[in-house]
Amino acid sequence: MFLPQHCHLTFRSFAHYMIGSIIPDHTNQDIVDAKNLGLDAFALNLDSLDSWATETVGHLFDQADDSGFGLFFSFDHNHFSSPSEYADFLKPFLSRPSYFKYAGKPLVSTFNGESVTEDNWASFKAAVGDILLIPGFSAAVPSPDFFAARNSLDGVFNWNSWPDASAGKADVSDADDSTYLSAAHGAGKLFIMGVSPLQFKHIDPSDNNWYRRGEGNLELRLEQALTLQPDMIELQTWNDAGESHYMGNWWEEPIANTPILDYVRDYDHKGYWQVLGPFIQAWKRGDSTTAGIVPSGKDVQGAFWHHTLTVNADCGADAFGKPRDFGNAEDVVSGIILVAVGKTGLVALVKNGDRELGQVDLVEGYNRFKVEGLGDGSVSVKVVDGSGAAVAEATGSLSVSSSAALCNYNFQVVGF
Image 1 (cartoon, rainbow, N blue to C red):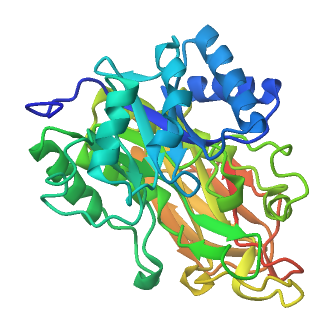
Image 2: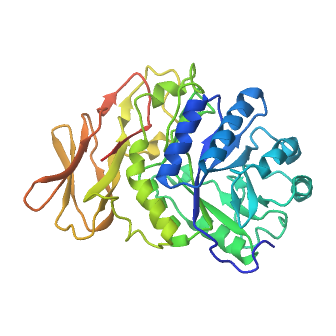
């Protein structure tokens, strides 16, 4: 038992970070940007102990040691079968100044690993020392007695931050998160909750060609996280270009000469920062609703996002074809607009080409919206006051099309 009675020791947040062959200038920029956004650490997704991966890990730890930023490992069990495979690698890092600790203990996580036995987890902890072991599971089934046969675990991270494809055009549910949270706290353990926009992967015609619904996802997930009050929050992800849910920088060197580059080039997602920064501030204050999420020194700020290919578009020239479950996507513009306290009477005008898709009446604080009718042409959002004067506005650099050579269902993200 880790915590005999649950209490928030501190409100920590971090981002999942894919380890690739990334040059030092870029790893350093990632740390600078994440720290400026308010994040406490990166969860380093490591799926190899080859030199290309360990060199990048070394750059990150050297830079984080000097910057006061945290790092911890999330070992990828799509590659590793047993924690014994990385125990010796892990041990020297646990004493690094930048290794992230919660309640004084180094945090170690995973991506998957459901098949690891309780005895193997116990042996791993005995080998590496006093750690917090909180794996990230995507295939486990949450239940009130989840930890009854998992005593060696100090908590769980629910990887599933998107609606299940079988649910169709449904909003993301927090039911599994709630079950995990109750089970963890009932057993004196911890729960990490994920926050993510969408999933879109398009690197072959079969196993790696899918869409997991992002319409209405990020904006609902932020609300759910504040309401549920997990112990920690993990953004999914900082830089996973392959699955399109990157919310930070992606760099070309680890994905050069792959199909990934084709669907992320020109699709910058840093517009999310206009919302994520104020959200992280609210989380760290202990807010339990979105009501206090306001702009950072502006009257209005926010972001909107949308596909640049309509759902029923013609992209038949793409040898990979449309992604699995693309029918769960929608022709909509979604977003979040934050309004400063005291600013009233504002309206957001959403335009697509020469058509106005809709108007959104804004209130002080947090405003999420989803407007239907997306079609050919550029997309813009303009916030006006009662006199019709523009307070803030932005237009996406990429136009929407109903035909393309590439079946690209990534999001264009526009911040303002």
